Image (cartoon, rainbow, N blue to C red):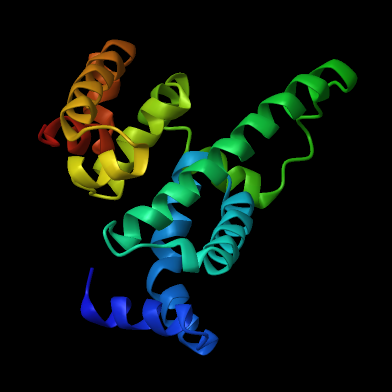
Length: 194
């Protein structure tokens, strides 16, 4: 963690709440992108970021410098997103039972979400469980080290490496060779070193 962030955290912990603005500005965009990749919905990701940053502020006195602040924040975001995903699954079950889905009324935001998350890699990612998808998002898109991911997931770096390797193999099985060629993100994923 950089010295400026550490300094600001100590000031916020000492009651200088205006210094939290620096922390929000520094981490808001990266936490948003992380949440969006996990949740696959822009509006829900925006809401999640606000919730996570408020929760982090409320619990900042529990933060200990032995752990990287970024990892602490990502862990909080991960658990928040898991809860959103679980809630969405329950809501989806009830929605399909109660109402036939109307395909004619698609909002522009939904169309953008479908375009962003409808490429072959996104469909394959959708088949992964939340833990596997989170691991890929942290490693590939967020470019976190295995040590940082281990901190976030409470796992050893070696366990994270093994899970990442197994997840890449599983993802490769689900994509056809033609889809692999068309998918830019897939090539980035495969080149990600273990």
